[in-house]
Amino acid sequence: MSYDVISIAILHHDAGTAAHIQKLLERLFTGASVSAETDSAQFSKALEHNQPSILLCDMHCGGRGGPALCAEIKESALLNDIYIIMLVDSTVSDERVEALSRGADDFLPMPATPDELLAKVQAGARIVRLHDQVNIERKRLRRLTEQMNKDLLELLEVAVNMVHCRIPDSQQTQERVIQASVWIARAFEDLGEAEIEDTRIAASLCMLGKLVLPDNLINQPVVLEGKATTELMRQVPIYAARMLEPSKRLENAANIIKHIYENYDGSGFPDRLKLYEIPIQSRIIRVVLDYVNYRDILKLDPLDALDAVKRQDNHVFDPRFTQLLDEYLWTISSETMAKNVRALKIYELEDGMRIARDIVTNSGMKLLSAGSVCSAKNIERIISHASSDPILGAVYVFKD
Image 1 (cartoon, rainbow, N blue to C red):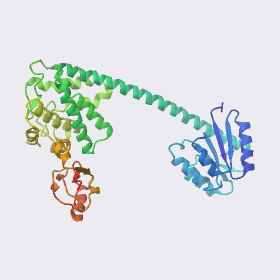
Image 2 (cartoon, one colour):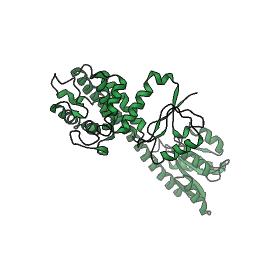
Image 3 (cartoon, one colour):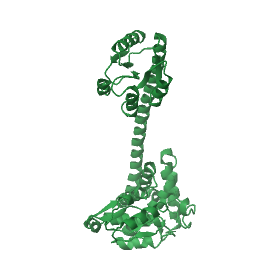
Image 4 (cartoon, rainbow, N blue to C red):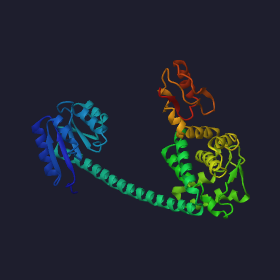
């Protein structure tokens, strides 16, 4: 085995012992870089710049001692790959336990024979090589993943451009649906980053199924008041899902899009799912898409469009997401910005703060009305209630 890429450091309080081990290792491991140090403080300072593959560390090196240095190395994201062999007193069994408990990978009872030293360092070198191979493979997989994501984005761009070419006015609608859907997905807090990304992808492709429609229907909404505007509209989510299903990466987005037109009470299509059977992201995109359709296709003003959505709570929409849509629209309005408000978590509330927007829970319970002034008592009540019925969205207070 060649050791030309292995570097070994020795840290020992006794200069003679350190030099002796260094000579042995240079003889046993031809090609390896071997260094010795007696000052633990100096060694620590140089560690990030001269990071060894393997460290033989004396339990009793000066300063903090070997175990403390070992723990520091293993807690460092930059240094924790170093393979540490702690040099322990062969007559003190507790030192072995302490060495391993502080993060050492192995220990060597001292004094040790050259064969014992060779065996321990060879074992460490094998593990270092395996770790290096894993890191190389991890980097290769990361490059492949980055390329796959790049290819996916290009594929999505092609699909989106197809929609834009077929439905010329769809680009602005799509951008608004994406922005609002992702905002609501983040505000809901039950979704992870991967699920939020699926929301973004599904929102960007939510009109894909309309490509199958004839020209006279292409600019019409798929649903109104929870019902398909024509029988052909019932095929829109099915065709969209079929277009995406061949891609494993788009499997989640395909399922989300397929169920966008399910109604909360089970009266929708294509599978008549209801309540929590409907994917969360489908419920989010649906409430946004219907609001945008009320604005863009039916030409309702913002308040009337929002009222039209709210009237369908528990029938078409999950009421939590109509509430979050309302919050989103409120946060982006120029009037809200002019009111000089800021968003907080409930544990950031303080006595005397003035509430800018009703505090509402997942169940729809209003805990505090806009304009109310926080007191220690109602803050405690809000936090207590939120442990079983979480606050929906953020808490908004005036900056005054």
